[in-house]
Image 1 (cartoon, rainbow, N blue to C red):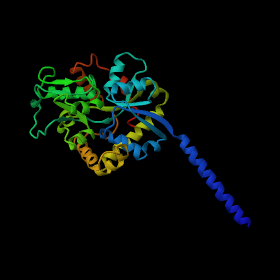
Image 2: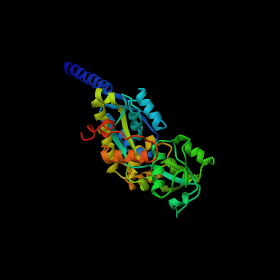
Image 3: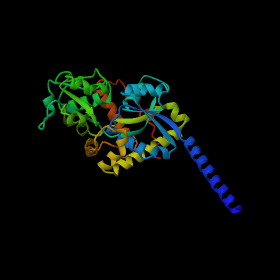
Image 4: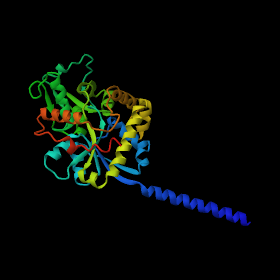
Length: 328
């Protein structure tokens, strides 16, 4: 009898300690408000990091929101509505050049090039960039990465924007698919999975890849306020490590495996669309294999922005980019 009572006490004590341990572990998770520029398969390594538990391994609980534009993401970070922003590095350059003391600092890069696709109203299997002469392309917000890289690609192919071809920069990205379907513009640039969905429904057709044409450009990166890096560098290091693990996972897994991993973030998309979009992005070397934003790439980006007439002065790499986290 005494042994039975003793055994029962041990079991109850073990359960109590286990429950206490679980509560303690959950309390240890630090909540991080992350604001992304848009929701796209283009950011697969981030969603992999979320679904595969890489953030939890670092003691982080991510609260994800969609800013629907780099300018809005940066505003969210600067006003403490978000701890970390995810958008084009140009947002940090603009804020630094404005002279703000607590500006946005880039600490990790995710994508290695443009993730949009040029779409038209009909299939064009023999498409050439010169075919766009005299046409209007819906290109997103003025000064944003999609419009800037689009102009870069057009100029690279001998087309002068404003003379040979026109870019409509009057709307945010979220409004672009509907505007094009509604009859605006001759062409539009769209991210996945929206591009494949529109094509499947016969509403538009993928004509060309901006990513393939532009080459490697630091397109999307993570940033936070300068004060956050000074006050909580461990948070940024943990976040960067989780993203790096997501990058490694995507690099070593098939499109089918990646599609299953990110499915919770795209529940309404078919497996076929997810797999084909991921395959497209893999084929054009979309995702960085590590999160370090290189100096040469940072200055290439600024030169592209300057050539587009959106930048008056070049921001210094050592001020706008924090390099101490990625190597760790």
